[in-house]
Image 1 (cartoon, helix red, strand yellow):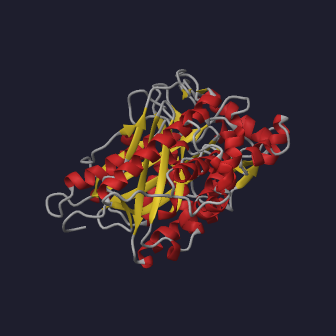
Image 2 (cartoon, rainbow, N blue to C red):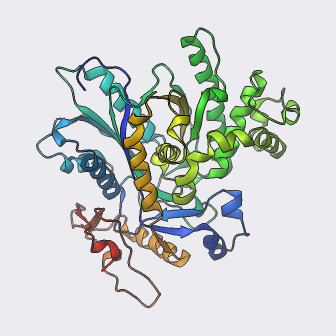
Image 3 (tube, one colour):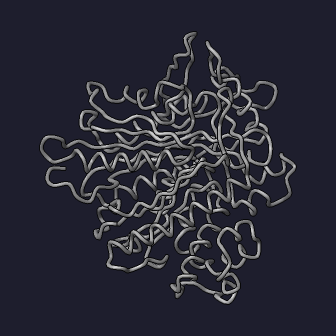
Length: 472
C-alpha cells in the first residue's frame, strides 16, 4: 500500500447470512396470501432469518472475522472501521466497539456506527473511502480501512413480514483497488419523510407507510440520477451518461420487483433526454414524454410502459445482481453490497473489466445516493473477489429450510429478546423436538452467537464449532 494514494476502492469483500431460510411460496400459503403475491408480485424466492441467539453484533463479528481471517489481515494493519446498521441493541454503545475484540493490541482505529435506515452502510463506505484519501500517505499512515454493514430485518405480522431478511457485508478498502470509487461522482438526495421509522425502543418492528416508502424511494432515485448526470457531465466536458455507459446497474433491494421498476424509471429518464438507442418499445414511452415525474408514481400504465421498454436492459444489467436479494431477502444496509457480490458471481469478468458500475443506495427517512465504481482493466485482479462470491454462493445452497411455522416461532423468540435481563437465548435451550415439531436453529461453522445477556444487560458471545453448526 506504499506510495501515493490513488484508486481507492474495494480489495476484498465477505458476506454473511443466517443458515435458516423460509420458502416464499410456502409462506404465501401459511399467511393465506394469494398464490404468487410474494414470488411474482414482489419477485422473492426465499427469506433468511435469525432466531434469538443471533443479533446484529454477532453477525457483524462473524463477517468481520471472516474478512480478516480469509485475507490474512493483521489486526494492527487496520486504521479505520465504520459500521452501518439500523438494528440497534444499545442506544449508547456502538456495534463498532463490540468489534474491537477482533483487534487485540490495536486501539488506534477510528470510526463508529452510522445510522439512517438502509443508507447507513453506504455512508459508512463513503466515510471509509474519505479516511483513506485524507490519511493514507504511504509513510506516516499506511493502514487498511474497513466498512462493515448489516441488519436483521423483521416485521410484525401483516403484509410487510415477507419482505424481511438478514445479513452482513464487510469491505476491505484501500488504494490501488480492483474496484475503484469514482471521485466527484456521488449524487446525494436527502429529505424528511415518515415512510419507515422505528420509534418504539422495545420493538424491532418498524412503522411503515408502504405506498409512501415506494414513492420516496423512486423520487429519490429520480433526483439522484439527474444530479449524477450533471456531475458526470462536469468532469467529462459536457458528456451526459445513459444506462448504456454502465456494465451493470445495481440498486438497494427491498424486494426484486421494485428494483425492476426502478431500472425502468432510469430508462425513462434516458428516453426523455434523447439517449435511447439501448431501449425498446419507444412508442409506449412517448405517451408519457410530457408527464411530470410526480404524476408517474403509482401509475400502472406508466409502470407497464417503462418495464416493457427496459426489459432486455434489466436482464443484462440488473438481474444478475439480484441472486442474493431474491434468496436472502432485504439485508437493509448490506443489501446493495450483497448485490455487488451477486454481480461478481453471475457476470463474466470480461464483461466488467474497464467498465463502470452504477449503484443506487436508499434509506428511509430519507437518505439516498447514486455513485459509481470503475472496474480495473486486469481481470486477474478480480479473482479474490470472485472466489469470495463463489464461497458465499456455496453457503447459500447449503442452508437449512425451515417451515413458516418455525419462522413465526423464531420471530416470537426475538420479541422476548428485547429489553430483558438476564436472558438466555431460547434457541440454545431447545431439545431436538419440543412437541411442536421445532428443530434446533443451526449455525454455519465459525459463526458468532449470543450466549447470554447478564443482569446488567451485557451481551456475551461465543463462536460456533463444526459440531455446534448441526445443532448437536
